[in-house]
Length: 164
Image 1 (tube, one colour):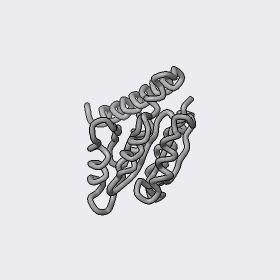
Image 2 (spheres, one colour; image 1 turned 180 degrees about the vertical axis):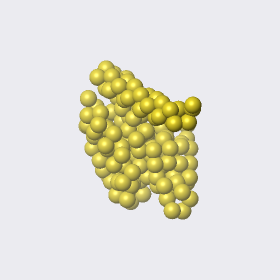
Image 3 (cartoon, one colour; image 1 turned 90 degrees about the vertical axis):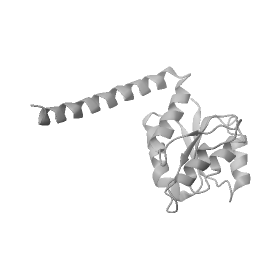
Image 4 (cartoon, helix red, strand yellow; image 1 turned 60 degrees about the vertical axis):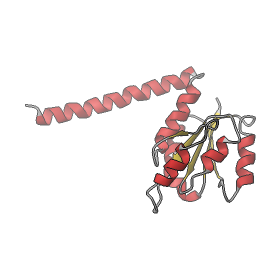
């Protein structure tokens, strides 16, 4: 199975990125985690990204806040799918990171999840890998079924309390 590369612009992003890591781990998807900044360590980010396919990666997830150029810089150096997680900031609440991540120029796509959307970033990466992995696709289907059952159980409890 291909690995997922997880890059964050700062270790301050780790509390959110941990949700990505935990989700990937729950599906037994291999991953690596790195702190590379598009601005402070551009050579290291570029080196990792340019060799990612040869090193067994299938998808890259980038978490960054404020200017949030990491996902775009990574996407410019690979043809692997890149998923951006815009991070919340104290300045503009993450809107600047969202816009920086989602507003990519034509030809350099970045799939972008919600501000702080670490779980969805992992699930999107898993869906991409599951295109060619039937076992992983089954795990996704099982999770969806379990999520549906959980919501319906909550519905039953609410209906029992309020609908007489």
